[in-house]
Length: 285
Image (cartoon, rainbow, N blue to C red; front, top):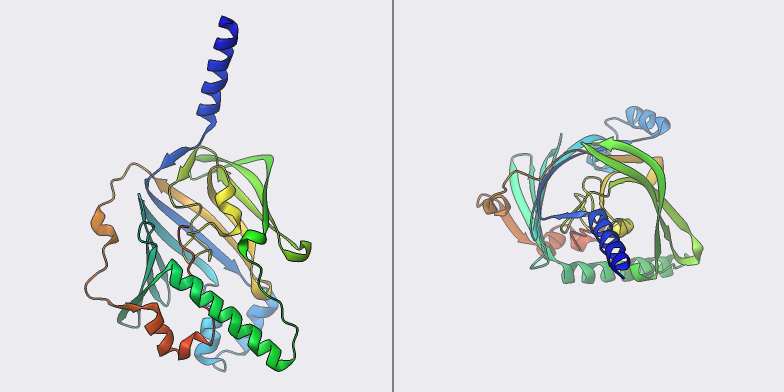
C-alpha cells in the first residue's frame, strides 16, 4: 500500500512537472519573412511604374518584417514596422474588442471592432461573394464553419534551440470539407504557454493572435512555423526573443490621444462598404 502511494505521488509529480508554465506577462520579438517566386519578382520589376498603388499593396508584406508583442493578462499589443509605416494592434480579451492604429504618410488613424461585429461582417461578405458567383453562373462553394474542420497535432523527435528554448518539431494538420488536408510545420516549446497568445508574427490574426490553424491545440508556445501563401509565396515566422521578467506598464495599452480612432463600420463606408476585399482580425480567441 505504501509502495502504491509512493508511486502515485511520483507519477503525479512528473505529470505536473511536464505541464507548460502559464505566462501572463511577456515581451516577444518576432521576424516574419515572405519569399515570392522568382518569376513573380521578375514580373514585378518589369511592371514597375505600371501597376501604381494597386501593385504596391498587392505585394505588401513581401520580404522581412519585425514585430514586437506585449502581453499583460487580458491585454495584448503588437507593433509592426514596415517601409510603409507603423501598425499597432491592441487586443482586449476581456471586452473582446480589437483596436488597430495606423501611422502612414504623416497621418495617425485607427479603428476598433468587436468580435460580434467581425462575425457579422464575415457573414455579409460570404453572402455577397455567393450572390456574385450565382449572378456569374460560377459554382458556389460555401465556406465551412471552423467547427467542421478536424485539427490534429503530430509531434516528431526533432528538436532545436530557438531564442534560448529547446523546441520540438510538429505538424498541425487541418482536414477541411471533402477531406482536403492542410499541413503546417511548426516548432514549439513545451516549457511555457502564453495567456491569450498561441503564436506571434505572420498574418494569422494580423499580428499573430488567435487560435486559427490549430495552434491553440499545441501543448506549449509556437516559436516558429512555415506556411504557404497565395501566388506561390512562402512565409516563415520565428521568435528571436522572449522576455518574461520585464514589468509591462498598463499605459502601454492605452490609445494615444493624437490618433483619430473610429468604429470599423465607418472605415468600411469610406472604402465603399468593404466590397473590394475582406478585413479580418481574429485576435486572442
